[in-house]
Length: 168
Image (cartoon, rainbow, N blue to C red):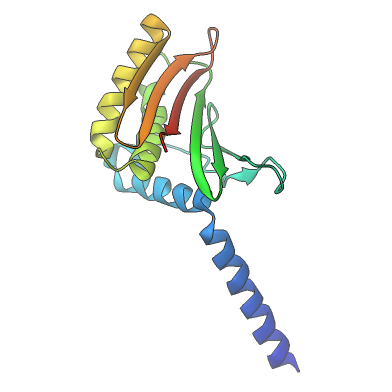
């Protein structure tokens, strides 16, 4: 009897973990973490790495998940029909020094490279610094790839938001 219960509980755990892995938000989160770890500059930074949790109800058309990567970097994932349609990365307060900017750029570029591999993590790091400085100067900056629109903008004086939206 104990063996049967152990087998059933093991099978249910495998089924549940397989279902969790099928969630594109969890899959993207795992790719992002791997990108952070693989980058020498980024792996030396400190991150909170809270697993995304669902904010919205299951019956809503657009599902909202939220995560916190550092004390000032929050990531919101939005999915429809089991596909990520948008990601907002909010940074508050706006980082001023390079040492404050580096963890944010590590997170942003790792997410971008995970969802839109049209550029490398290092290319995204360079793009993100351009997005950052342009957003501070003019309030908004945009870049488009084949499948995604990338933008950065200020919401008032804070936070700075990086948005990645699917074009499909």
